[in-house]
Amino acid sequence: MNYSRGFSASYHMTILDPVTFRDVQTVSIKGGSIDRSTSELMESADIDLTEIPGDGEAWIRVYLTAQQEGAEEERIPVFTGLLSVPERSINGRRESYSAECYSVLKPASDILLRRGWYAPSDVNGAELAASLLSCGPAPIIVSEHAPALSGSIVSEDGETNLSMAEKILSAIGWRIRITGAGQIQICEPATEPIAVFDALEKDSIEMQVTDTRDWFSCPNVFRAVQGDLVSIARDDDPGSSLSTVSRGREIWMEETDCSLGAGENLSDYALRRLKEEQSPARKLKYDRRYQPDIVPGDLVRIQYPGNSIDGIFQITSQSIELGYNAKTTEEAVMV
Image (tube, rainbow, N blue to C red):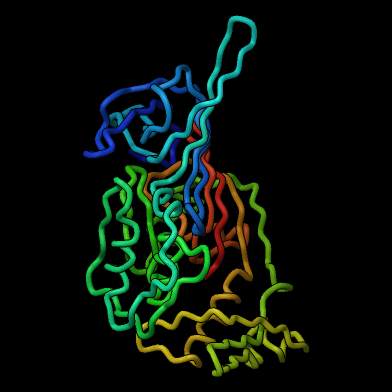
C-alpha cells in the first residue's frame, strides 16, 4: 500500500492477555489520539470508547485498518499500552467513555530503585537497561554489540527503573524505540533515514509548515562537571553560524550530572553535548499522512526544494489522530 496516497481508515481496540501479550477480546472505539515523544514514557493515548472493557486497568492494543483502491487491506497496530479506568459521561440516556492510556514503559516508571543501587562499570549497558525495563509484560529486543559502561552510575533519590535505564542508555549513546505492537527495542541511534518525504513520488506532507531556526537558545560554550573535574568545549569556528565568532557573544550551558559513554573522557563528553545542544537550530512542524513504523528518534529525509527544505531530520514528537488518513502532526529537527 502506498501511504503517501489517501486511504480510508477504521480503528478498533483489543484487550491483551498480560502473560502472552496477545489479543483476547475486541472492543469498538469511536476515536482518539496518540502522542509520541523521545522523553519520559515516550507514548500515551486518549481513547473514546463505546463500552467499558471490564473492571480496572487493562493492557490494550489499538489497530488501524487501512483500505486503498487497488491494494490489499492492511491491519496495523499503532499503539499498545496500559488502559486506565475509563471515565463515564452521561448526557440524558446517552453514555460515553474516555480513557487515558500509558505506554509499555509505565511499569518501569512506577518502581523505585533501592537507595545505594548503582550500575557498575564495564557491564553491557543495553542488557542492564533491558533488565530494568523487564518488570512489565512487553517483549524487549536488545540489539547486539552494545558498548559497556565506562563508569558506574549511582541512583539518586526518587530514581526509578525507567529513569536509570534512560541514564544508562544515554551514557552508551543508545536509545529506546517502541513499536505499535508494544515491543521495546533497545538499539543504536538512527544513522540512516527510515523514509523519504518529497514533492514528487512520496508527497505526504501538507505544505503548511512551521520552519523555525531556534538559534537564540543554542549554546556555543559547554561546561561539563564531574566531581572535581571540569571540561569546557567551545564553538569558535567562523564557519559555524552558532559560534562565538559568528554571533559575537558567548552563550554558556553547564551540566553537572555527566554520564560518560564507553571510551569517552570528560572532554569528549563536553564536545558531544555541545554538538547535541546545537542540533535543534532548525525545527519543522507539519501535518502529514500516516506511515507505519516511523517513531520519534527515527530519521527522515524531507525534500521540498521549492520551499527551501531539503535535508535529513530527526523526529522528536508525533500526534496521531484516530480519524481520516490517521493525520500525523510531527515535529523534527535537522541533523
